Amino acid sequence: MNLNRILKHLFYPGWWLRRDFPPQGLSKIEAAIAASEAKHSGEIRFAIESSLPLKALWRNEPMHERAVEVFSLLRVWDTEDNNGVLIYLLLADQKVEITADRNINKVVQQADWDIICQHMQESFKQGHFVEGVIQGIEEISKHLEKHFPKSSSDKNELSDKPVIL
Image 1 (cartoon, one colour):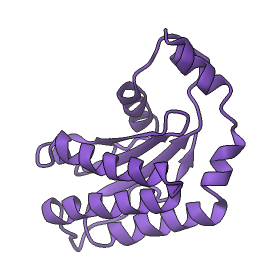
Image 2 (image 1 turned 90 degrees about the vertical axis):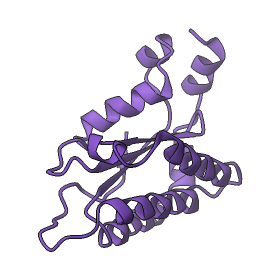
Image 3 (image 1 turned 45 degrees about the vertical axis):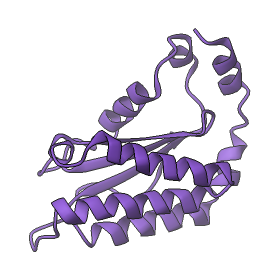
Image 4 (image 1 turned 60 degrees about the vertical axis):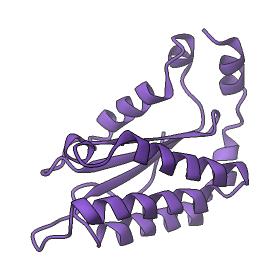
């Protein structure tokens, strides 16, 4: 149990989510996902959570564990080619985690995801939340274009709309 983390999450103002990600910003992210997916057969989801629930805080749930939980909740794993990617942002911690399905993990290393997360977090520290997410989508897209080229039979299997938890 980490008391400082619990307090930070309990008192994190939920309205900051709308400040940092206004509706027009969420629309830009949705458009960036759609534009990215036009170049490859991968599926990208973006989920944002202002703070963790008390139960998760009490257990001191690691960021990675929560991202895997959200990956499952949003059924990102439920694509025909097992090529879904989740970008999960936890605002209270100002951290981002990228979780990918098994076929992507065969060809893209965790170190690659970590670099993209680091770039995004640098943008967040400067207050550029929407831009940081779009930059991350573009970097993820480069990996997906290389390993999962667009095919004529490709269809959009997952919604491009950002999810607010």
